[in-house]
Length: 338
Image (cartoon, rainbow, N blue to C red; front, top):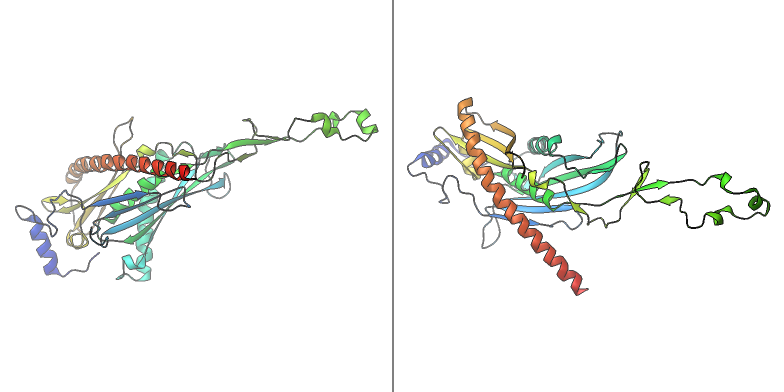
């Protein structure tokens, strides 16, 4: 958050409350700065994305920049925090260059706060993908979602959730195949073979002690796919987006810059998901700041927040589908060149 004097805060507030409202970059109250999104930015991750808001077109500098990456690992159920059906673990780290005015302790507090908000939202059981299980009751995928904030020029929470949703959309879960180990029975070797000292294994030629067919008593699994192949996460259309409403006494506005964030007394973070076969869902909301408001006002803001979130969700969905087409085309060209 930018450090502003009382006079600077008063000037920014009076500009926003004027008729018509005035912002330093000329945007309307509900306009976002330019958003850039790219998936597949981390080659060794199961899914990744980079999102920036407000980058300068000529030199690519400035703005808020966040990178998200997903890594899957096998976790034993019943040991530690393993859960049947898999689970999601989120972590947010901030580059010290993004917050040069913060001490190491304050930076740790900020990272913990961001991690708490992200994990409590995305880690909820209602959003758990249905294809993170491997062996029922034995093994499942642990999905680690790591976020890095490289630059913060305002509206970092919206950017974090956009990057998280894009990385989860890009994630591929390796297909697994159950394996059952079968030990040979000694009584299968007849007495005549024993007397002649003949290896009884020859009598079972064609039968393998490693059975990879689907069984009800599977003890392990194998991967028929490479680590970067597989199927998309189940329910990836339902991942939520965040919209931050910056509140002044008589209005609210979106996508605040650092200076604008420092000038408002209240900010309302709303996280909405839009499942394709269900009604829109408010996953959670968070009101922060020294200002005060009432429940009636918050209910009105929720309706506006749902409308803004729907617009962001639709635009993000369209961009992610375009990214799928771009990456698939690039993969085909790379394969042909071989």
